[in-house]
Image (tube, rainbow, N blue to C red; front, side):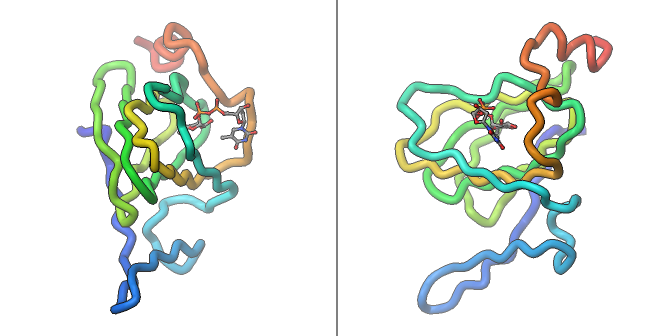
Amino acid sequence: MSLIKWLDFPSLGDQRGSLVAVEMGQDKVVPFDIKRVYYIYHTEQGVSRGYHAHKNLKQVAICLAGQCRMLLDDGTTREEVWLECPTKGLLIEDLIWREIHDFSQDCILLVLASEHYDESDYIRSYEDFLKWVNR
Ligand code: T46
């Protein structure tokens, strides 16, 4: 089964432009209650981010502007995808190693998270990650 799971957010566009609404409990697009929202922007050219997995955290990443390349790895399979569409969210489940590369200068990456920030939830060594997923 592919690690790449896209969620489609309906665009409520009209002649003025586009609008996407994400509302907890109202739509079934995001498969968890959103406890935290953060966004990544002004990433320096050539800089990559991530290089970790989470023990208990689901996230949806939506690229609001520009583009970036996300690598997902479950310990067995590695898949890469470009994020570049504000109506498409990439669902990232627990225990998935992620790296984010090739941020465009104008990239704004919005992330919806199922839990509050907790540094102890991070697995920041790939070796430890493989132990967590029993590889
Ligand atoms: C992920 C990718 C896509 C906080 O204080 N609160 C927060 O909610 C977050 C996400 C970060 N921080 C602090 C922790 C660090 O001092 O912000 C700093 C940068 O965070 P980090 O190095 O973890 O950033 P990324 O881009 O490597 O990873 C982030 C998320 O942490 C991670 O969950 O999946 O974006």
